[in-house]
Image 1 (cartoon, rainbow, N blue to C red):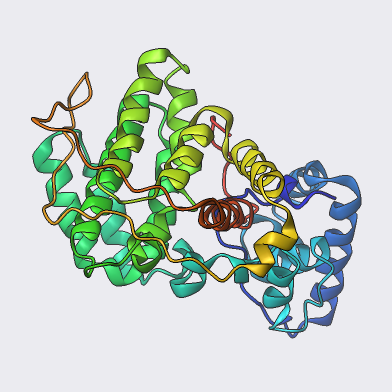
Image 2 (cartoon, helix red, strand yellow):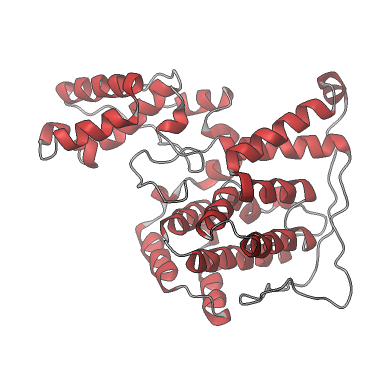
Length: 346
């Protein structure tokens, strides 16, 4: 069974959950997870409705045992042992789990946010508008809580997906833009996006955020132009390398999975594997601006500058291949809480 049928591909997977002390509950959970694996997510929906109000199946509605049920289902999908805490690492070694997702592995998903941080950020997102002052105030709150950046980035993406309006989704992307620019200006000399924890934390969720806004906006040319200008701005300001920006632009239009697959094919056909393995790891040296420049939040056309912005110097071919494969892993190896309501732009 395809794991993406149960877990969306852009949020951290469930963490290890020990079995509950109730042996009968363990059997119900394991048996239902096995049936779900054979019959698909619709079986879980059917059982949730059928057993509504039954305390023995409260785990289907977020009650006692729900965390263990999610963990068990995850392990069955990835052929892992649910009784071993190290199973998440094993999934990552197979190319399907969280160990290959560096950003989420550092501080975890939105479920791990301290209660005060989660409540505070929920209030920030609820009050967010497209005004410069609102974006600035929200950015300052975010940067003050940047120690939880991985969870905040996931929560921001989840919030965007829940919004019915393209304009409101655009406000969230504006906030992400300002946070990324602020973090980029704080980099040490010679550092890259790989050294920027904020840039790394946002990279797994940006493809889904951009694609969701693009679809909600009706996939109109002006929508693609506006979102594309924001993405290009990240290249102009050296927030991300050109290869990463190209992937984000493609993901905006085609969706994260399609973009990752296309870049994987391109990377695998551009250079024979033997040549790649024989070369040492190459360092990237993108241009970094020393002064933060904010992207206007109400513009209709791309910002005009007195002189062209320096573009990120292209890495050599092998460096681009390494970047593309890293990005692909970020996109494909994040899974979503199976009971998170599905957004209209999935």
